[in-house]
Length: 331
Image 1 (cartoon, rainbow, N blue to C red):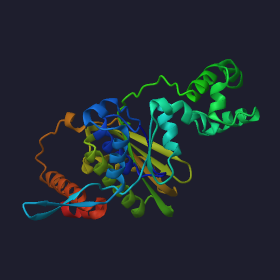
Image 2 (cartoon, rainbow, N blue to C red):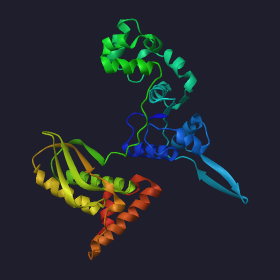
Image 3 (tube, one colour):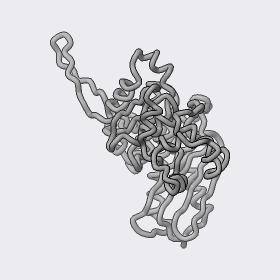
Image 4 (tube, rainbow, N blue to C red):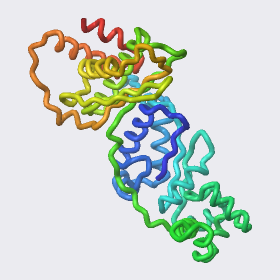
C-alpha cells in the first residue's frame, strides 16, 4: 500500500498520518500489508478504506448502551489521502497517483497488474521521469504496454544499462524491492517567517521563544529529546549555528537557554532577518534520558506548568495556550 498525502501538509499532521498507518502495519507511508492482512483478517482494500476513514472524516457515531446516549469520535484529522494497493512497490505507487484528488483507494489484484499497467501513459509509470518519457515518445512508445514489449537491450541503449532494465521490469509489473521499515528522521524543525524585515530585537526574541515552545511541544509529543540545536537565519547573508546540549532535553527551559546563547553568539544586532528556523538534532528516546533531581523550586514550577500546558494543548488544540502564557504562569 502506497499513501499519498495532500500537498504542503504540515509536518505535525504528516506524522499523525504515519502514526495511523503504523496502527495497521508498523512501517512508514509505504506499507507491506501481508502481515496486516492476516492480523486484521481483512482485505487490502478494506484497510485502505479504514485509513481514509480515520484521517478524512469528522464523524460521531451514536451508540446506545444501557439506554444512555454516548458519542464516540471515529476520526480527528479532517484530511484525505490517496491510497494505491498492488502486488509490488511499483504497482502500488503508480496506483496511488491514479486516484483522483482529493482521495480514494485503488487496489490492483496481482493477476491484473500487467494488464492494468499496459493501458497507462508511459509517463504515469512510477520511476519514469519527464526526460525518459520524452525519449520514449520520440520513438512512438507512449503506453506502458509498448514499453513492456520492448527487448531490454533496446531500452538499455536509450537509458543506460541499469535504468533500462529497471524500466522494462517495472513496465511488466516486476519489482523485487521489499518494504524496509525505517525510523522517522532523527530531527525536528520549526520555522517562523516575519511579515517584514526585522533586526535582532524584541520581535526576533519573541519569535524565537515561540519556536522554542513549538519545538518542545513536538519533542515531548514524540517522546524524544534533543542532543543539539541548530538555529538558522534567513535574510541578508544566510547562516546557521549549532550547539550541543549538556544533557538531552525536550524541556522549554533548557531549549530556551541554549537558543538564546546561540542567538547572542551570532551577533546579528544590525542584520536584517526575514525568518528563523530552529532544528532539534540527534534526537533520542526520552525514556533513555536521566532526570536529575533539582533543588531549584522555580525550575520545578516551570516544569509543572509545562506539563499542564501540554495537557491543555492535547485537549483543546495546539493554539489553546501560547508561549507568553506559558512563562507568565510559571513565573
